[in-house]
Image (cartoon, rainbow, N blue to C red; front, side, top):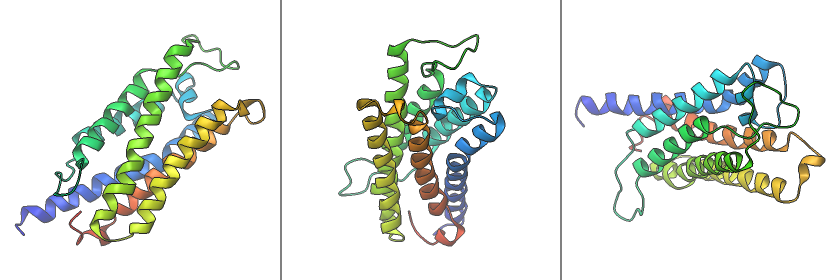
Length: 207
């Protein structure tokens, strides 16, 4: 191992921890800043916390795109870089293409374009699906906490499924904040996976 490798390893860990903290804190920061519960994290785009929502997603995107993931190893179909690059692109697209305003919002730049809202949801879902894949397929390759990383990946995917069912069966008439709850579960699981993967105690692990 060269002298540069420990520095690179440390940079990996620091970046992972940053991504993890941002994922866990995002929804609670938005709620605390606005002192209001919106139907989803995306609807904070139309509140005074718009800059926080957009800024964090853009930061997610840029960090994931530039994330120096491991190259594809023998037996792997897709390498880390491809997953994180596309996840970053989807995060940025989610920030740039806002969701549709809900009935209770009346901000001057609200829009009620259902097609645009659907595109936003698809990008947000793709982002979560890919970070779930990173946790389930890639993080366990280091050899430690395999069950934990796989569990976090499954929770992220389960949160997406629950939100799909929420829309499909019209559960919003019973529980308006269902998407917000699903998103909090998903980003918390995603954030915990990245946070644990970036712990200093993991420094000896090659991945």
